[in-house]
Length: 122
Image (cartoon, rainbow, N blue to C red):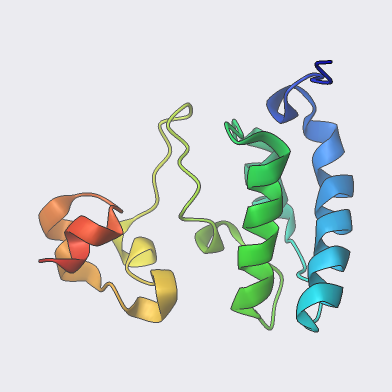
């Protein structure tokens, strides 16, 4: 029995409710405050294609919860979402901050990619 419905990309209005549900679930599971999503970040999340559908959104909220930001999430906190369908990219300065700056700017400039394995070998 196939229970597939419309993809998450086709239901952007469902995303805020799903985010709230996943944020509460992650907060309880990890004993952390629930993640807060800023308006601009929400717009990005709603415009993302979500090839992994709801599971990818849930994993994204888990990741954001574990970051333990002391502020609402903004678009620069979402560099791991690839916006290839909008040709939108983040500046290297913002990408270099992924993981608290552990990657750094130079490997990203050299490889022109967010492929962490390839950037880390530079």
